[in-house]
Length: 621
Image (cartoon, rainbow, N blue to C red; front, side, top):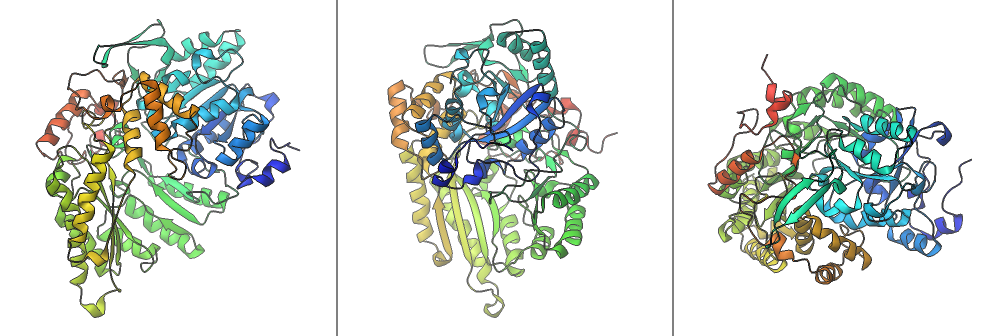
């Protein structure tokens, strides 16, 4: 029988011990003496968040289909266990075998969000792996990073041996085979990294040198090893239907954030919103075959016992077989009490009809994401949504019996004026007015419009990567303008307004576009005790500000200047397919508030057509 890494004494002292014991339904246990490679797959956040991540489920399933690989899971220990592990010198362990991470060949970390960077250091530290790649020896696992934040890996470059840029289903087999070959030949850690650097999509940070100009900008970024490539090409799965997908996902013992079967209907997005990094990174849009999705729905519900099924994509309404798939799910599964969750839908007649069938209208609220209050601002960000679209959608929803609406906006967008800020409560009020146009006897009580705003963060590989940000105080002042204007609206009793934390926005901004110099801040913040920074009850801004002061890194340099168009960015060595020329054209169009049509209406020549697949070739012979 498996011996648990934590004693009963420890398990009884901590919150939710089921996070750490493994043994869940569909988790995979192999004989460690009969595999060649042990791979620890890490999500650097608490179990409930990590278990909800589809990317890890896909890779876990894919790796474990190989007889020579055993892939296990590891998550960040919550703060209560973190303290005990340090005090009692308990090494971080994997859930399936309960073995220390230090004993593995690979530690793969998915990097989803800038505010989990200190948790990455926690995982390395508790595992007994040196934080810096340069200090690791032959006994340490190869630490590999993947996920959206690796499209600017530079703030984390010194902590990782290598980064996998792109979708995991393409070259991981090559990477693992190279490891086996190197081991068989008695090769060193450096020999393996050189073999890895030859594989398309693999970035080995230690094989590159950065030189800086006097003003702090990058002067050059060049390979220092003959095996390293000047450009790293992102990896893309062109046939998403034919690729692997987990039919038996692991079923957690405790409630997690997304406790349901997830069907990924497509990758990519046709819309081209200029603030949206995912919309640029995951081009071109590629759809999964609807018959295959129906097959997965049957198998996954049967293999998990879940009572909810959700469709996953950046913009589900754009999936061309949506009507057929949703009708099938309702007809097949609703009678068995299976809930159907449909995120990322545009509010139109079809969506409202479907939502009316799958959810209790009286309890649920509808979500719109206009992102900006004024039409000019929506054109700047290329949202492709008019006020008429928004009011029509809300009107149809109200006529259908809904009376609760959530609205999402961004503040601090490029070219934003006070008029644009005031347009947010004005739009919310217009939606409320549309509700009160319904005769009183036909209304479903009072309406409730909840608006919330986050602060815009310029991300790499978007048309807004050249934009400036603002200080914490300036963001709060913008939110105050909006809050005050909400109090002036006619239907203010039906309106609510919330805004996100500006302090976190400032930090995200630094690390989204940071270079290698920002690693010192992450290391120092971790030393000062920063952990779980994306959790508002754990976040300590004073410690972060202290870390900037202690390391002499200037927030203003990263956040408060608009970049010149010819500046060399820390991420320019990565080729995502979308060209810098296209992003520059879109930046210039944004400044003129010009809308670019979506990919199905017209090709804008972004560059990803070179892959000759997905939406780029739809309807062409």
